[in-house]
Image (cartoon, rainbow over all chains, first blue to last red; front, side):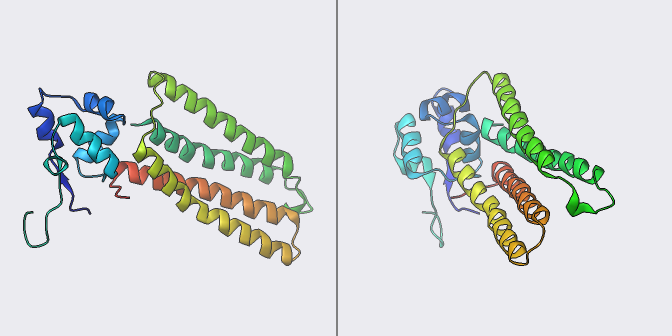
Length: 73
Length: 140
């Protein structure tokens, strides 16, 4: 199990309730891949992670979080 | 469900059905000279060829229901690669089994069937692995 978490769902709703299909089209992946990333079932490549952050116009750390062992981080 | 996952499901269904048809055809032809005397080659070629054609047709049909979209992304490629890697373990086992049987000078029937069985198991294992990655977690 990965420790990688993400805020894609919150960011989608913050951006006018963008659908998973719309995000998938903008990133150039399938909707199933967006669903898997959102649910923490798939760790995207670094390139895909940057593409997702670029769609939301935020920094990578605002989309993906990798907490430290000792606490949030 | 993505097209690639559908392809894995199709392979999971077609491979054992094709092999079952092959076994039926071969076992039905067993005569007094025993199993190794059966001319297995037509049955093998027809069932392998048939399985390939059926899987291509099913893939085309499933793609039509998907609106003709055939997007394959990084996740699909990663899952496909790892699934093939896992499935290919049986290809190696089949090759080694074929070598051993050949060195033991067994009838070509047994060599061909050992290799064919391992090909089928390779397809099954690879498909199960891919479906497992699609349905569960996948962290390359």
